[in-house]
Length: 347
Ligand SMILES: NC(=O)c1ccc[n+]([C@@H]2O[C@H](COP(=O)([O-])OP(=O)(O)OC[C@H]3O[C@@H](n4cnc5c(N)ncnc54)[C@H](O)[C@@H]3O)[C@@H](O)[C@H]2O)c1
Image (cartoon, rainbow, N blue to C red; front, side, top):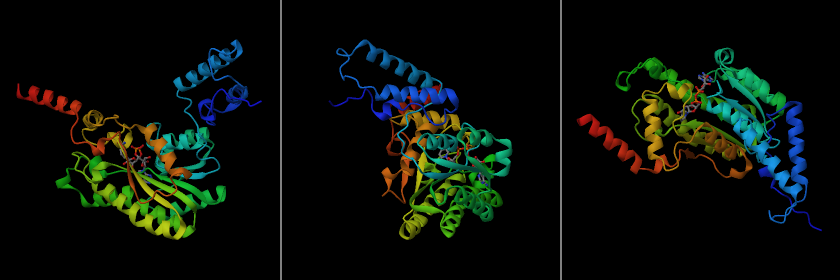
């Protein structure tokens, strides 16, 4: 007799590895047990026991989702090893990518500058995800070497790398684009773009990324179009995307490694808050995008697919994770907000 299962693996596997400890273990096994019991597909035909089973399952699922403890896990990164650059605090996009990567079965190393490790919450994330934390300034090749060597000591070659790093002293100091400080501009480029080249060059020389591996850097649409307030970060992002293409060719040809950039919606984070007029930009992008802004969780999900084997022929691309914003000209919501604002201005 064939056994029918009540739920697919992805529907039931609601308990991530991040939910650890004895209680997590018991809950996880409880869910697995529920999953393995045979069930009829039709609710009317179901016995009381099956109905109770579904009920309990959904209570647990709802509770965990509600508490933000869980998201669905598909085991997309089972057995994979990665390095995540740039998680500072819970708002950081890299923080969510790190959590999702572990939920999907990966083992990771976390890294950020020594100051960020001291002042931020990276060590807490490391403990939660059972991940080693290695301080490194991404503008310094010797420190990047330490990160990749540590990763190779722990894992052998790595399968994925996230570059989630950006900073502009000109933006921080409120310098206008037609009054840039050039030393600061150099720092913007070094941190936000050239660090990506250094990361790739160091990794390639050490042969630290496995064949079929995937590298993703985060970027913004100001690389293609003008956005007031984004300042010299726009130029840094253009350079970053160009590096992804130029190195993507070489690393793909020589070692089968994929390199892409993900162009993310405006997102409330420490770096994001530095952009002048951020809250209005968020509203504008939300009004213009048919699907609304993509948040840090959406970005993390997208990065996971790019780290996974499901995207093994995608490389040298700038991929928009922005709710449709990049293809829009004007939406009904945005034009209405514009008209109202204009009418108020003219009063
Ligand atoms: N927040 C947004 O609206 C948005 C939109 C599109 C793209 N991005 C990009 O996403 C990435 C992550 O930014 P976020 O928004 O999560 O903000 P964040 O402030 O949390 O992350 C920026 C990170 O860069 C790190 N960093 C700065 N200098 C460094 C250095 N020398 N070496 C190593 N790390 C360094 C910081 O410590 C921090 O962890 C950035 O590249 C940013 O430009 C952000």
